[in-house]
Amino acid sequence: MQETTTEHLPVALLDVSRGNAPLRDEIIAALSEVYESGRFLYGPQVGELESQIAKLSNTRHAIGCASGSDALLLALMANEIGAGDEVIVPSFTFFATASCVRRLGAKLVFADIDPKTYNICPESVASKITPNTRAIIPVHLFGQSAEIDVICRIAADRDILVIEDTAQALGGAYHGRPLGSWGQIGCTSFYPTKNLGGIGDGGMMTTDSDQIASRLRLLSAHGMQPRYFHRELGINSRLDTLQAAALLVKLKYLPKYTAARQENAKHYFELFHEAGLVGQGASAVVQLPYQDPASFHVWNQFSIRVTEGRRDELRQYLAARAIGSEIYYPIPLHLQECFQDCGYKEGSLPASEAAAGEILHLPIYPELTRAEQAAVVDGITCYLKAARGRKAA
Ligand SMILES: *Cc1c(COP(=O)(O)O)cnc(C)c1O
Image (cartoon, rainbow, N blue to C red; front, side, top):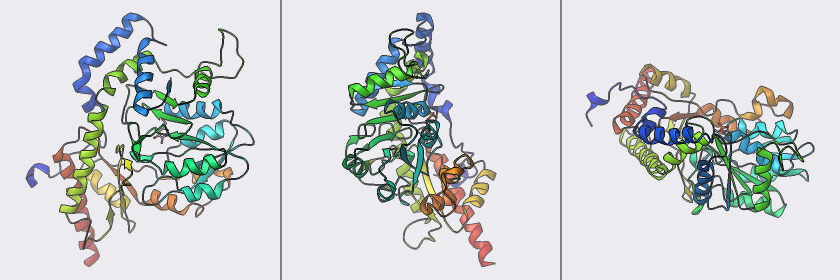
């Protein structure tokens, strides 16, 4: 690849339209079919998507709902988790993993992460268990499985529920077993930037239990059964037929999208090595993501670690070259203002705090080109050269 073609090529962090554009006619046809049918809720496409996601996850049931956030909320509601109960979640994750716990009046207990994978640390989880612990919500962050086998063992010994947050890892697996099938319930999201992204909000829950499945359905539809009889306090959280129709089109391509993300990740590794930024003799300012060999990683995100306090400066440098990057997540949840009353302070969860200060995410979406990847790595190389020059001067 020629230098001149890659220099200062702008690279967007995300480009949802690039993925959807080739499917335009197929998606519009699917949407117009729903439009003509008038079955905007509970249309046959919803059931079809549910059975295909259940198959993908190797679970008996999948139940659609309005978002990944609602999926987590419903999973807790279906198990009657509330005041007096404790739920353990990682601090280094998206807000929705934790907000559902607080919303139901249960006690949020934050665990620290494994600094290599950024996933919830089983030892930290074990140390936080009390007689009131009812559930653990491991997140398969950035597309890579948490040590879900160990967490399920810890939980099973004590009769604690495991609710997997698979919002970033649909299609992923651990030791060959699909994510979303390990815990009692798996919760996923079809937010447009997830591995299977809709044209709006959407979510789904997977489970092997007939009883949990029917409770999830009941609670997502106002707890109403039969019509206008409410035994339980449900919510209104459905997956629209229009979303399901668009998602069914895209689901056919999910293996292709996943393979493209994996290819892009592999190519980043090659480019970083070629540029001498990592490996033997490199300065180790930049660290590449650790890959758990047992995990079938679906690369929702590609995260590098930038040490020596250089992360924010590097990000600005890239932005000046119109190269998009993002920080997932700049503030761990135990330090968020709305969770202040949980009693954590700076230093409480050191691995989460260190990750929040050093992590940086690069574009990884399936349609990213080789030239764009080269431009990203070139930008990082130039920054490090300039920074070293300044230090020497
Ligand atoms: C996106 C996401 C959610 C929430 O999904 P929504 O569909 O946006 O509500 C929950 N957990 C994690 C880890 C996520 O990345």
